[in-house]
Length: 84
Image (cartoon, rainbow, N blue to C red):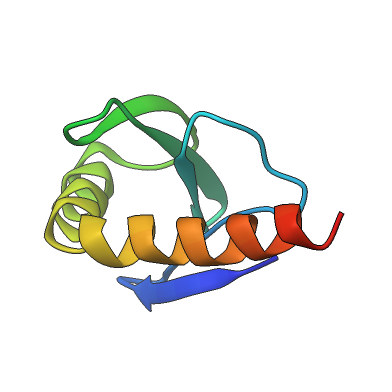
């Protein structure tokens, strides 16, 4: 599972066998969330057990680092597709 970064007690990551559309999972503090790329920015998709205050921090981290997330997705999954 490729980990992109950690912040506020959460891990921002992809699962190894992911699928389109581009998205990121956030796991920590007994909960998880998912944000999906809409072509312009990452939109909240779902969450389980994460406080609203933490969701605001998570969204800011994703917005501030969307280029890193996209670059990592493209590098990891393009490499994986080339090896099939």
